[in-house]
Length: 255
Length: 50
Image 1 (cartoon, rainbow over the protein chains, first blue to last red):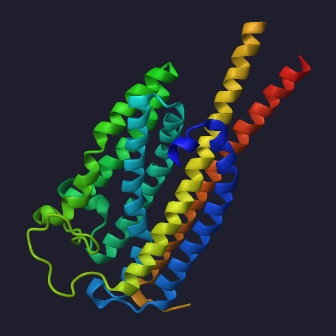
Image 2: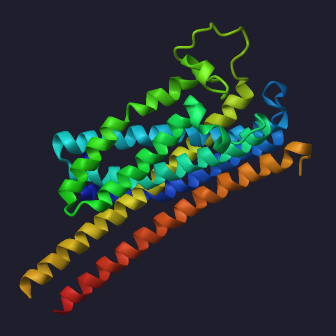
């Protein structure tokens, strides 16, 4: 599938159909998740009563910002090894969307923390391993975009940015394990869905109730489709820009 | 509308931001693709005329 779409012409044909489908399904899934999360499921007293309804926005954005960074690093790796131009186009398109979802995760987490912990993330960030590692992720996305804009040729910018993206992937597992392995350095709650490297065995029944998990998965699936549609649109924009640049170069050569 | 008591302001503000920010990103993507397509069409038109 990926090698089939690696041809820009095939990608443009595929994305023309895929973008509206992803948008429509994404909106329906996010809407369904929010409807159930806000109006249908009962409050969870273990997670602060009604306040836990914030997780149907915050948690999908947190999962997605890590997923988008992994996709950015993957696309950069493909470009770096095989020099496939469409992989570079994809990496360039993923960065602003990843930065947006990381900002969403941060802002919503800050508001939730204001009530849940009695302090917003902006007051805690320097001493907390989860918050600090997410902040680093945000700066990695911004750094990637800044590096691409700063270097004079496209090849140089792509190579430097790809190296940054590949090195930065080390931060994604750090974000994931920060709440399980270094519980003394964070006030963020431990992972509720998949716990990796927790020093304490999990109590029976302490995992997430399936009625909440279901809504989270609908939200995550919906936001993933929306992000995919946005990335494909930005990729289409980049392909148009490159075609325009080639036309312009031909025109200048002929003049 | 459900009554979330003291939590209402937090729950609704998070939900609204969770809708507004993706909508802004969608708008940004649409604008970028529209502008680059318009530029390409203009350049193609200029080349056809030349």
